[in-house]
Image (cartoon, rainbow, N blue to C red):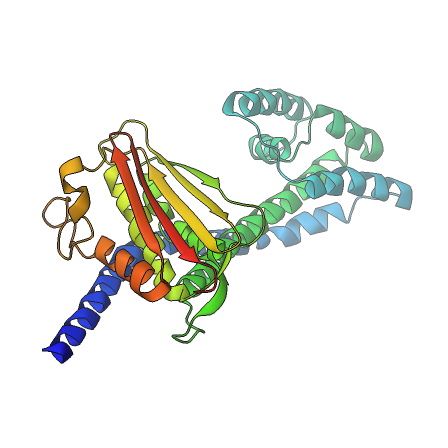
Length: 337
């Protein structure tokens, strides 16, 4: 009987982990799909764009300028590229594009509409273009501005690929940190902030989908304790995922995660603005298979697993208090395990 109980407990915990993995995998597929699609799209646009470069290069090298003028033209462009794209609202962008489009049309510049969009994005206005005109003259203005446009488009596409690739890299790093694939099954001195942030990254699609405000009140520096990292990430997943589900019917959705510590103990609080847990069931929420969620949404194993990991494996405690609009789960574990 004792052997069967141990087997059952182990299998139950494994099932809960697999269900948590299933929840995360769907979100991760969506999270990875967006940046990967952006990389493919930008790479295709860049390939197409570079195909037009020879003609633009041919026209620009026909322009005859001394070294001083070349430096002046380069400085105007590359200073704007170095500063990066401008953050403009729709009204500001439209107004600047219209003004710049009028100036380009007055100079009889071909492709003025596309040019105005890229120039405004990188902060190039009438003042800068007037300087270019004075340097190169009216006859050579068209090829020089066309060259400007080519370089800005290339920079924008490369930037999009870089940002999307970084997003993929951040997700993969979070997955590795979350699962601790390179760790054994023994306790390690671990910064719990890393695990919490990795879990938030893994569940980020839910925050965006439900428009949840996240507030992180973390202590400065690491929050280190001797723990089983992968097991603790199961704790954060269950608590944060439950908090998100609890706010489904709330108008104001806010999740607050707080951390602090003293000489002996680590404390982590997860507080949501959901509907709350009825007082008459608070004593039962850690019971196996008990759930307050609708059929098909909960297994009744998540909070029981949290209690087992914290109480049995880390000699800690789980505290809960709840009222409508304010439910808090507080984890307290010793630093030395």
